[in-house]
Amino acid sequence: MNEGVKRLNELLELTYRDIQRLEHRMQRSANSPLSISELHFIESVGLCTDRPCTVSELASQLGITLASVTVAVNKLVGKGMLEKTKSLIDGRSVIITLTREGMRMFRMHRFFHHRMVSDLTDGMSEEEVQVLLRAMEKLDQFFLRSLSDDNHAEKEERP
Image (cartoon, rainbow, N blue to C red; front, side, top):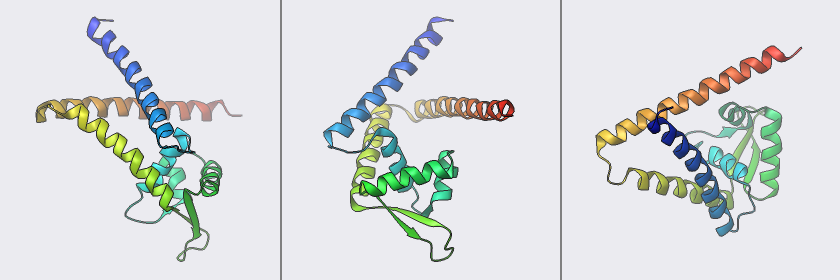
């Protein structure tokens, strides 16, 4: 492994840990009763801006089962972060929305991400930002391929 690749690997590991530590610090400073996973779940609900967000859509978007989404939703309803209502169009569907407190947590978390990206790109030329975007897209594609390979392997292992 050449020195540049070795350093990149170290930076990716450090960055991942630092993001987690900062998210935990932000969570504690806001006196949030939520775990980081719950904050990310709330973020997914908050990003459903162009239409009502259903349990099925969240499961698909997050790549988790309907049962897992239902458990998470019920837990966050109990914590006063989400509200559930039956769809007026399809009575089988459950619409998930943020409460006022859920919206506050969503905005706080989005602000953290905005600050992180703004600070990262501050002073970069447009060309440098485009190179960074291409690198991040390649990293994301690696994760998606790996997740897809894992899902395929899990299905093959089942009896």
